[in-house]
Amino acid sequence: MKRVLRRSTLIFAVTVAFIGGMGFFAYKLVANSGDWVDQHYNYHIAGTDGLAKAGTIYDRNGNILAQSVDGKRVYNENQSVRTSLLHTIGDNSSNISTALQSRYRSQLIGYNLIWGLNMPDSLRKGNDINLTVDADTCAAAYDVLSGYGKDGACVVYNYKTGEVICSVSTKAYDPEAPPEITEENEKDYEGVYLDNTISSTYAPGSIFKIITSACAIENLPDIYDRTWYCSGKEDIGGSDVTCVEPHGYINFKEAMSHSCNIVYAELAVELGEEKMTATANKAGINSSFKVDDNETAKGNYDVSDANTNQLGWSGVGQYNDKVNPMQMAVICGAIANGGKTKEPYMIKDGSILGVLGLGGSDSTNELFSSSTAEALDDMMRFTMTDYYGDDLFGGLTICAKTGTAEVGEDKGPNGWMVGYAKDEDCPLAFACVVEDSGFGFTYAGPVVEAAMIQAAKSLGAAAVQ
Image (cartoon, rainbow, N blue to C red; front, side):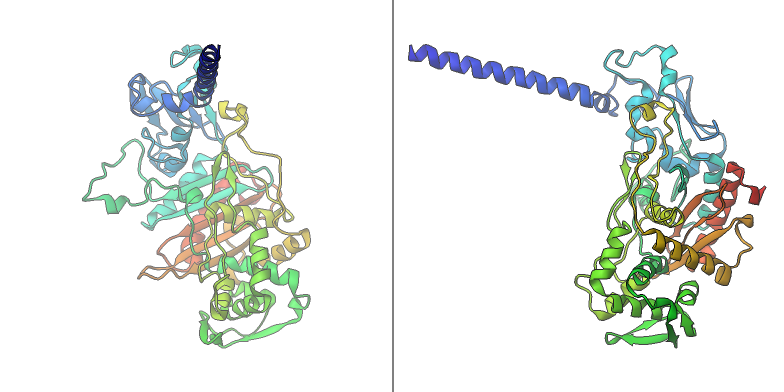
């Protein structure tokens, strides 16, 4: 009797394990079959690395960015357009992991559990993807940025709706003529598969003064009544903090517009580690932001081991500070939007991926109080009118801050420009970085200006028509 009971128990256990295993396999089949089917080693997919019958990708105006014609994947006829959008669209390979054609290949090729890979052509139009990006704006930004021969990124996004209008990363290549990377030339293409707008972080330099300013506004009630004296350098914590030039006596708004390192180093030391870190955390510096289902690289503000001099430099945007370009566009958009973010996205609701739950979110997150956002808005507008000049950007009303971040290693600095337009018919925030370059106004400024003017034209903004 005991032997029969043991055998019955064993059979029951094996049966339960079998049913459980089949259930797990069924779940994996449903959840991951799309990922399995679009792998490069799947020989059931024919032609153009699996994109022979893939859906068409359109920009916001219906311009074709990528399509399949006679079993071949082809890209926009304009070389600047297709190269500028390499990291957004991808190429025939899956080397750019964040690109649409890598991340959503199974949806583009029309795979599903019912039809497998044999979906009728009459149904394949449902696998097209409509994007929020504007091809002309991306090309305009790329033409200026690539002209420097430098790595970098440019982002323009609508801070009211969350639509990403421009997302450009260099270095890049023409997806119609991908390079053959060998041991001999691999250094020339280092980082070419990385989308810098999403996946890279950089030393911010003076654009981080936006964060230090927010901290000062919220914690120093007399901040607007103060003046400082800048002689070009000052001993802080036993070592010098230097400025590009002596500013003499200067107030808080002038310190922002003239980007005085001495004032911002002193402010960071006075505010201290705890308050500076709290403001950086609330603004999202140490967090990532979602763009559809890609997550941006996290920035970094960590002064837990900093001495007094290093704490001062952190308020200037040096020390070990890091930020991501998309992150900075979102932060600037929050300032323009009363302190609250609008989640950025590139995939429209009307496309197949929009149906799957992508295409932006109505949720918001407060990065700054409304009063702090209003004060930062005033300072960034003053910076534009007092220092940069208001005759740029085709007549748009711009609030901005530049940065020139020293990186060492015999490299030129990161040149930055971040900000936004206040125009009701052009609610766009921007961020641009050019690696190994020079002053942000000199290098990032022209990229941003080209992108913003073209984006404003595409939106029909009155100021640039």
